[in-house]
Length: 159
Image (cartoon, rainbow, N blue to C red):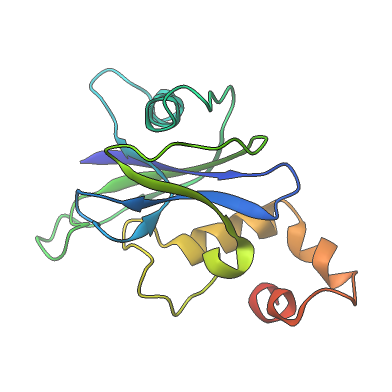
């Protein structure tokens, strides 16, 4: 199976939009937005479509950035066996997303999103790992390093 996951940050990278999944392989878990890539669709087209569908048109991405594509071995072990997962990210002004059949949408703090020990985070979305990679790629870690007044959780999670 080929799928995408998209992490949408507010423009200042202080919060990330996450969904508490109502069904699928990770019910009751917090995830980024995304889903299966449809036949004939590119990974980028899938990321754009999934965000538009899940947010009922409130978030329409023009150019999400690809973080990476992970290819899991097709070994029959676990939910991710044979999964090709393309991880995208983008920024978008905060808008309220109404809960829908996918789940409950919340703009979560980085403290929540970067909690490596949370059982509420999903498998397909190694949320904390992906989000940390995104922040590092965007130089956000350096931003926090230069601010001694940063809360202790920032130093703990980003260093």
